[in-house]
Image (spheres, rainbow, N blue to C red):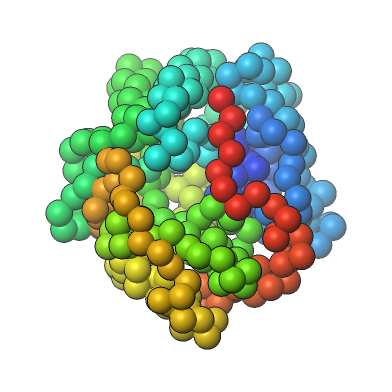
Length: 332
C-alpha cells in the first residue's frame, strides 16, 4: 500500500476504532461519514496524541447524496485501500422503513462501487459485511455457509455482498469481505448491549432483556477486529471472505450477569424480560480458522478484560454519556 487508506463510515464505532489502528501504524487516513463528527468520547482516534491525529482528515459526505464530492476527495487523496463500514445497521428498526435500508445498503453502495471500480489508484476494497446474512444457524459456520437472511437489514446486506461478487467475477474488482462477531469496547454507541447495561446499572434504570436473553453470540473486542481488518486490507487476496470471531460463545443473559457481577449489581433488580424482536437469530457462531491460518491473526483481548475497559470508559466519561441519547435514532 502507498500509506494512504480511506475509511467510509469513520464516525461509526468500528470505523473510528479502525481509524485509530491505522493512525497508530503511521498511515494517512481520509475518513468520511454522512454526519459531523460526534463527541470525542465516541471517537477512539481522538484519544491519540495530537501528533498522531495529524495523519487524519475528515470529510462529511453522504454516500446517497454526495457521491460526486466523495469521489472527488478520493481522487485527490488517492488511497491504495478503501474500507467501507457505512451501512444502515440496525436490525429491528429495518422492519419499520425497509426502503431506507435498501437505499443505502444496496442502491447507494452499488453506485459507489460502480465509480470505485474505475479508480486507477485502488488496490484493495474491504467491504465490512455481517453474519446476519446467514440467518440463524446451527453449530459453527465457515465462510462458505449459504445466505438465509431473516430481516430487511440482513437481506439488504446479502444483496450488496452478491452484487460485489458479480463485480469481482466480471471486472476483477479487488474486493475482500469481513464478517465479524458482535464487536464491543470503549467508545461504542450507548444503545448496544454492553455500554447500555453498564450505564443502566450506574443510573439505576431497568434493562429490557429481549426474549430473556437466550440468544447466543461471540463478543469480540474492537481492537482485535481492527487489527484483523488492517491485515486484510494489506495482505488478503481479492475475492475472499474472512470471519472474525473468538471461540467463546455466551448468551446475552450470561453477558449481562457477568457485567452485574463485575459492577456489584443484583441481576434480578437490573433486568426486565420483554418479548423478542421479529426475525432475531437465535445464534450465529462463526468459525474464524481461515483468518487465523491465512493472516496469522488471533484475538488477544479476553471478554472480562474488554468489559472492564468499557466500564472504565463509561466511568471516565459518565457525566457526558449520561446526557447522550441511550436509544438508536434513525436517520433515513
